[in-house]
Length: 339
Image (cartoon, one colour):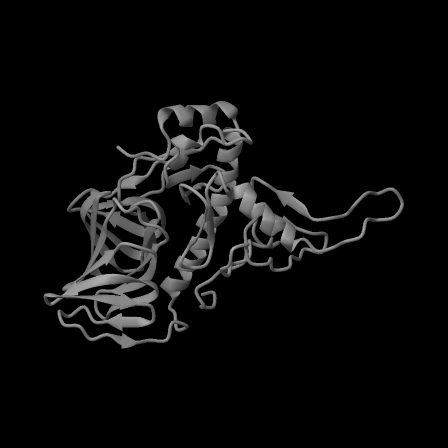
């Protein structure tokens, strides 16, 4: 069974005491976060301590009432269920994950999908196959909207590609039309905020993992991409196998081997130039917390960093805010205003 770490690499990390993170079994349908009242079958779902998750098994139905839920599918793919909605887990194997939207609404954020994995979303008479990065909104009544990326849709015996900025009804016949991607709803904006929090936790997890293996990165060959629990944030985050990946919402995920190379580069680029103080007080410059993953200066501000070398636009690393304890950040991408 695929795991984020082998027993050897996990033991090495825990022995360092850098940060006690926990690898989870790579099964789809793990309920990682809830708000309000959420039921799995007839039982109410409750968040568990220490990163233990409730697993959706085949043929089980998850239903929200006055609440929302976040479900981890294959590594890099998150399904967020809106209020008064329900989903059914058809198959929860990594190589064949199938989830049906029975009623209501959901948002799916697919940052990365391994070639050996397959995710299929069933909406009405349509089957949406995810094979690459995508951000889409699902509605059991009105159909599917693609905000970012693309996916193959099979409906009424036809197969077509649903691309960014297009929507279609889940009625059995293709009727693709354009829509305004800037017009979002409360569920989409909530999903964007949750995505930002998951990305924040990634920085701390990736840096702790890198420290666990030492500055040389020895032993990182044991790593696989996957979900990892961050006890400081009390939530699961995603660690890619290598490099840096932008999520569909525009937030970044760093691998342990790349977090210092990429993230510190952006932090340094964002540092404002500030002269040293006079009178022997030393330099009053920016602060950086490598565990929480944010930086600030004495005025509480931060300039936007330049794009990474090699081309391609890049979202700025999170700036500190004073109204969130423990290093929260301001709302992120997606184009919608905070709900």
